[in-house]
Image (cartoon, rainbow, N blue to C red; front, side, top):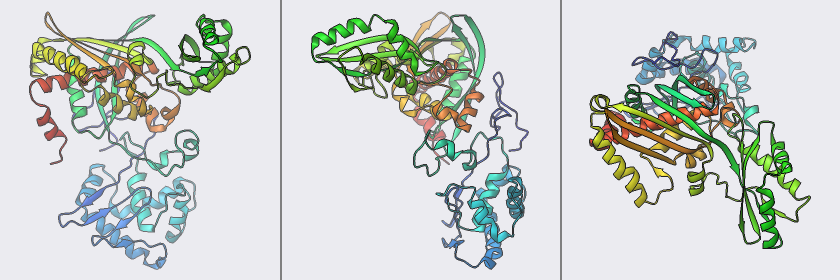
Length: 513
């Protein structure tokens, strides 16, 4: 694909065959690691990280101890292998890259672009080795050239390469004992037009939905749902924005525990002040105290700005506990007592909400249901009742009154740098469908979306780029984007199920021909 592909912005959609691009100020590189098997079951592998080149017979090339004078022969062999690998050849041609015999030039140009002197070719591997983390040995000059060739050319694909990761920043923040990264397929669905309701009024915006997934057919299904939604008007609102943490503390008697409950639930000024010491963005919104014998489970809820806020609210909780110890004879058992409830199925979160609670509604015209979804409002409404209400009740799900909310939540979380463990809370969703005059009314309500647009994985270059690409300004708008994607997925899947198309669609879209 050439660099002239159109930029997909809010309000536009890429045409078939062209992939969306991230904003021009986001610099992301292409990472491609082909593993091609020819018709005679031979393999041509190029691995990014611990780089290796295998010849068609499976014999390893590029032993570090080999004679440097043989490099030229290895270069020739590598070029021959690249030319024989049809998939790699087609891939290179599709990107409109320079000819394969320019590998050496690209390798040297890469060094020059890094302000390094152009060395004799046999000195290239140790110089490039210095650009990699220690866990990524580069085994040969041929390996270096092939890998650098596939990585060094700018591309509009919204992917990242090992070179876009700042390992100094990752260590101590995102990953310990970091040995590399796992690439995931990244797709696009959209546009998603929303009318967002806020305390100040309402605003109309158009978003894109980035999704990282390995499930073929998921994005196609979401895209069909979005097509249906665009024929109506979709309204979204964040009804609550409170992250929670629940310390557990112990007293000498039940009497003291009850007295403490009466005190802390009155929101005294010192409780608010000490809790908000955790961050200038932290604002106390609720305090609940559950007494169990002589122990108390505090459920502290607060707004955390644009961050998801778990670290922030944990700091605030710890600060408050240390202050309370000065005036109360309490023993801190843990800053988290599971009454939060964090990353576990919980009826409490389903009822009270955790993080951002969002709800959306849309009315689909009857013509849309007939022509786009290939079914009727009555059929969809009936199946939604028997599947998402009765079926979920029989299974005793906790908030699982939906068809596939977790699919969409997980894909967006991975693409935008959210904590994927919070898909547990995000899977709680109520999908409602009603037959109304002129069409089908649909609503989705997700009470516990634990997400943000700053901090944690959202600071990674590619993930930050995907947040910008979505068009969401802040965590509340991103929650609305997640809700819109979930609604699209619910609409399309229920329609597919009611017409018996699910298996057929997966066989066509989730099985490589």
